[in-house]
Image (tube, rainbow, N blue to C red; front, top):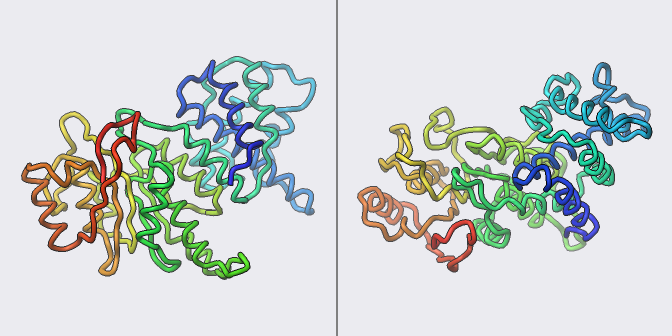
Length: 358
């Protein structure tokens, strides 16, 4: 459960940025980058305290360590230049793993106001790194400010809807789990929590062995077409205990490289809208269409293992529209796959979309 102090700090960080960075997605990205920056230094400090050596801010990158940014006597423009240079150079850092290089890839400071940056870093400085549920919840709260990514047709799925679908599908610890349009990885995080809860004893202690937890994390995969969403997914999963999350930038509908990969559980709330002119999918789909919602349903049905199951949010046009592709899809589902249709209340995705969903 998110504590009020952490929520307040996140709100304050956004309030500081809003005058210079009005776009909510950019605010989330700036806070994400700063938090990971601070957490890397926290890990280095802990390593030193235990008699080890710094890994992330060593050698040529030692001058970018967090204490260097917040030390007394450093001028405002010096802080700004040091921070902007650090985040842009971080992908070159030989001491950081590939996950962190992906997070910092193409990172930059979108404003040049020293006082805004000073106030922002002061708030970030109050966060400390750990793998606690509290920190993961804090990041999920930060992601909740993302409503729509506009042209991509990506809408944040309400947490209770995600948790319901996960509970119905009931993923198990030894099953592979995929979200082919993962956004910020909400379905994957919920599935992970569900499995951990199912493997907890009466006293609240987890019953999974370290080996089982390692295999469990490797079973989760996500794809998204947006590099920004991939970055946020990686951070979200990392803060929930995934040391090496498997989320990749991939166009599920037009690329074929991962077509032969299957999963036991597939969950998604894919984009409802198709770009102007439609999509140009490859020819391996059973149903030929240029509508994203049709193709995603077809993709999920075709990529289940023989005992697999899927839960997908769709616009109600999938159920009622009379175009040939919609009819073909319904015939395929009813004859081979469909277990249930659950109608969601109108307005679930307001104000971003008024589309009725199931």
